[in-house]
Length: 471
Image 1: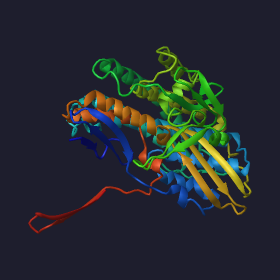
Image 2 (image 1 turned 60 degrees about the vertical axis):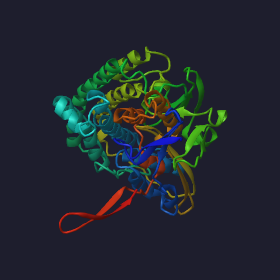
Image 3 (image 1 turned 90 degrees about the vertical axis):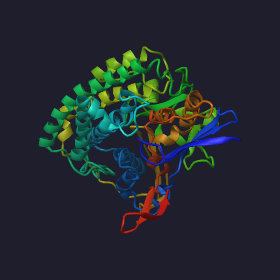
Image 4 (image 1 turned 180 degrees about the vertical axis):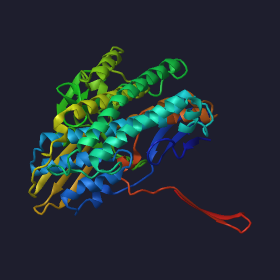
């Protein structure tokens, strides 16, 4: 009799999803799928809202990467209204985004992924967390918390709030950076550079330790997509590059033209769509985004320490397809973000009062593209003469990676699930393959959210009489 294994819910990632592993009569894996079990309707209920509300509404899609949605929305509004924002405003937006990259990459690498490696994939799941990491290596855990705090403080000072920022508006920024905040952040940024160097070393140490124990968490050839500026790593504003698995350029285009290059496939097994490269069709045109992809499409990194690390990383090969290297690429980007934040804060223009220009409402459409921590994020709005949104489209990083996650799950399941016998450590390896991508399932489904809920009815003696669950 054919059987299936379910991992539900998945742990140490943002949002709610599950994995289904199908076995044949002999207990061998025949198929494995990644399912996103949330449904939201963010695109739909943005319709009818005023254009200038979008940078405030869309960060509510996610509490982990709200800055990315905030800035993509503001850029889409600028594009629709035909606005070039002041230079100081652009620098402030980029600084806020660097804060986002710092806090998100530090969160994922140290809090969500590194316990698997530092404590071991077969360790007690009750200990396999930041708490267990702190018990084993308290100094590293403290550095991780300090690094994430530095990024969160940048968001707070520049964005007006540590979560769901409010200062990026159509036409620029609603407030300038205070001098006292600048010097406080500059001090933190200098220390963050040192701490992020430790993160890179830790990531390489993980690879060295697990080269034989865990040879692969998904290793297959796909295209890679990311934003670049004249060949350099870029997060805020550039052109989108697609490269083949052999590092040859497949295409390059501006964000406004994304519909000419990207289409979306739909399957019944998940609420999450499957974007693909139009010119090659489905499924040949699948690609990956995020840290691994960005460092594959980039030719250089402009900050000194991250640039040196990038050159050493790329010496491993023209294109890196092994998912384990997402962790190394993520820490190199973390180092870049810390250095770039320091550069921006060292620029006197960062405290200029000239941070906005007047915007006049008009009908049209606008596209905002940004590199979120997890990969390329696209916001596309259509508005009428009153400035009211008539249609919205979002394509987020986890959607771009959806098919690649499916492929990773299947490859790892076939490697570690044998004879129908399952151990917790084997299933954790499947989750580890997914965590390489740092998926954000709330973002990807734009969900209003069905959160797991359990209601217990107990007697006066504490005996459970009834349980009602909603998943």
